[in-house]
Length: 354
Ligand SMILES: *Cc1c(COP(=O)(O)O)cnc(C)c1O
Image (cartoon, rainbow, N blue to C red):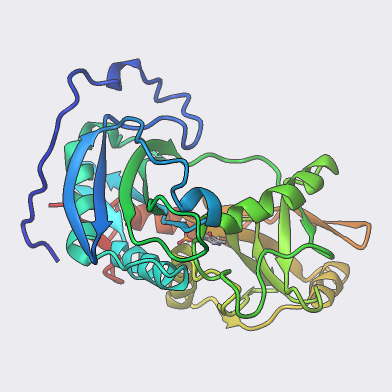
């Protein structure tokens, strides 16, 4: 994967590092000293470089502001006990990024830029990747349309950038969710499978309504019948009924999460039965009533695995009893151990940052 590309670097004069309180990081609000940036014009990517993290200038007519051509990725870098730096399945993020790009009529970003940009930025910012339990460097590759023109057409120019933000995996407290009966995050033939910025914008309002009712997130259901469960907020979703794990199949309205597929592979390797099939709301309500629904959890890069302890549907609140031997915490610990190189990686998921 390495091709020894060395992008030019403009170093920041003084580091912000000493002013950062690593014990009180709020997710995604502090950025490292540098960022990666690259420009697309006349059919090719040009001038990849690492520069000090700073504001960028765009014309107010830049297409991203008007028609939302914007996509992103989310991934993490980890440091092991010997100070090696690791990425987790970065090629999968690269492939997904280009899938999103194609759907939004944006150019693909070649591997030499995406992967080598990540490698070089993480290497330069290595002191920001802490080795303490739960610490990581969150990486945010993204692309925006920059052409100054507001006719409704895809942009001819773009910026691809990577930001890095020190992070920590928190226990997020009790999470209760609202199962959507009216709103949806994606539809057949839509952009739900892409990490399009607009998918997030569309979720904020229904999520805020759920939060007013004291529920932290929305479980999205299919836009046709609202009977089939798709995702939990911005995470994929798993149910444990008896000792079996259930998750919905990916489709054009469900995002193909890298944590989701890692959980499935890991559970398989541990002999946990996994069923990937449509899951109906009635089946889940039935299972709570019969006491066979033992766990619900979301999966995604930021929280890894986030347990959900109850849900509301049809005006009724359903609570799960706490599970002693939870799959959620067992799978989370195993996944985090692989990510941090404290156990072998039989799946070949870790990528050593050169
Ligand atoms: C990013 C994302 C996920 C999680 O994907 P990971 O690769 O596991 O981080 C799940 N659902 C949605 C809608 C997402 O945007």
